[in-house]
Amino acid sequence: APKGVTIEFSPSDFKQYGESKLENTVTIKHLTPEGKVIFGTETHTWTFKDGKWSAITVSPNDPVDMHAAAFVEGKHNQAIILCQMCWSLFGQGRTDEIIKHCNLENAVFDLMSGEEGIDKVPYGGKYINGVEGKGFEIPFKKMQESWVFDKDFVFKPTEFTAMANVVTMTAEIDCMTVGGKKIKGTETHTAVCERDANGILKTKSWTITNGK
Image (cartoon, rainbow, N blue to C red; front, side, top):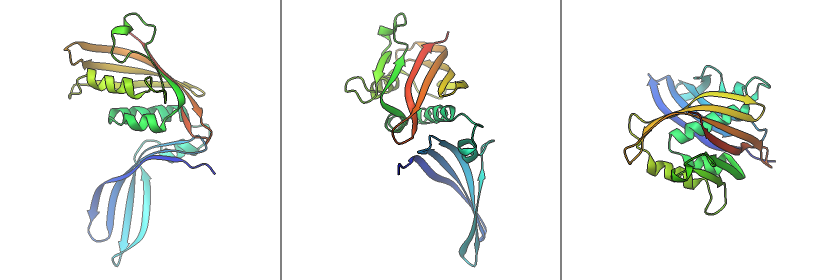
């Protein structure tokens, strides 16, 4: 049977309350063979009796429990959750994991190709996952080389809408280039998502167009 993909299951922020209680946060990023996406954080509360573990309580940290968001049918669009997870990984500089886990083979990453002056943008153009010389690692590396990632750096999604497995996002960007030029405005990102042969939901294409 196909297996899911665990991108992250990491405990953190351990807090001890006397001899009988321990709390910690767990961050989960997981793709299931049913095309579900589990993404968020939760609190695990451990209780001990006579020095031995006696119970564990799991409670969601997010407004919507991530497990319910994944498995309660029709409530939450899984493609949106996948895109939110990709943004989270990007924000942590974990682009290798986006490439490895979140895109179909031969998926297309289109950064404003065909737009005026795009040939002068280091990361502009059309890229194909897994194709040598055209892979997604190229634009990600060029973004890292072109932008100043300081405390004022902003590149984040502000809106997600979906029609079935097509997600449209608005993203805000406000940063400096290493050459001292300002980039500020909004972009439109459109992701088409599809399940792979093992049922895992991934992106088939991610297209960025200049909003304004």
